[in-house]
Length: 126
Image (spheres, rainbow, N blue to C red):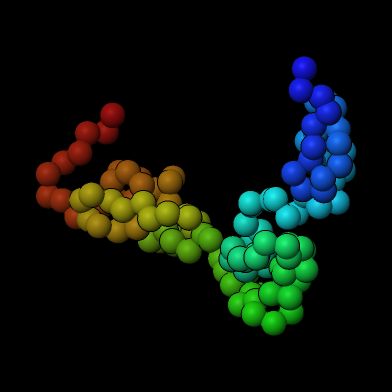
């Protein structure tokens, strides 16, 4: 038995069931925490020096150095428009026809579905 155990952050004595920072709600745990906080707005890792409170450092970053761009959050994901006449679908990724090189939606990706004119050899109707 190695009781009692001394917390390396706050220096108080605990049993094996309460030695973890979370178990005894250690107020000095931030001194030993090696995680790098990330800004919730710009997703940039924020360096925190030993002894600094991460919440304070991230808050200061958000007030002064944050490169958050609200317009960037509203960028459209579905930007690849189907070239089939009359179709208004857009896909997240390009779906390129191997024969004609056109960009189509999932529904019209096969050469028979978009009346492909790119290849002279016939395609099976299977």
